[in-house]
Image (tube, rainbow, N blue to C red):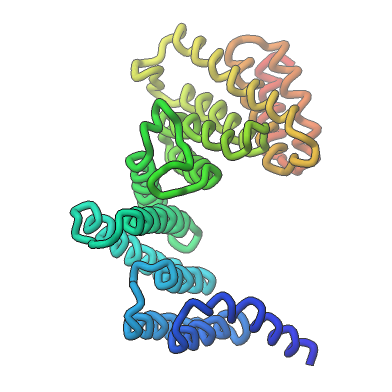
Length: 349
């Protein structure tokens, strides 16, 4: 009886209010879909009820571009992902993106007849849905279920490109929440960070560094100037990615083949980024520190030690590697312990 009571309480306090904006026929199928997800898991039944909910919404003349109807599509995609059907979830997202893109095109051509403020609000909603759906689709393409990094990168690049296009001169003025999609700064920073990660993991270090640097402004704005663990991570990523780029065969500096002099200058620049990451980690308030801080700090310190070694500063490099080893062992990072020990040996230790 206690379990039944909890289910009834959840039904009347969470589920009913959640679907109160829908006509009765739509609400019925959404409630059935919810039950098939959480109470008696049955993905085929849940999918059927989501589809029936969309059909009922159409029969009730609900606006297919309204947040309520788009919300059904998003919940359908989330359900498919939950049950391991990533490609089907992507198809739902891509269909939603296409529908919203067509609506934006209609608005821009003046086809949509509505009050200016209503039209502006509708366009903003469509852009937000397009960008968020592309970001989610990119996550799914990159997931273990699909493992298509190339497509993930293209889809996320399209999302970032649309955000840049719909922002006022982000290259010189930076991003703001006054973008045409109405995205908050934290979400913009997260999207850019993800794009940087994808570039880094596919060997496009120059692009990764550019995007990571672009991430700092919205990230700092989202934190109201307070230093954060995420900032430590981004600064550390910039340093480690720059360091890796210099080690690539046929490395280039500012688009030109690297020379001994330009490599030395690049190492000094990279070292400053690593130092920034370390300094930022030191001033993050204790109550805000988390695993991201610790991992970012270790990465920055490893990069710094490597740069010192590459620059021939062997004594400083040995000290840097030795100071990191105890923390690497504490975390069971045996591969990095071996790397640090090899660094000490290369430095003559």
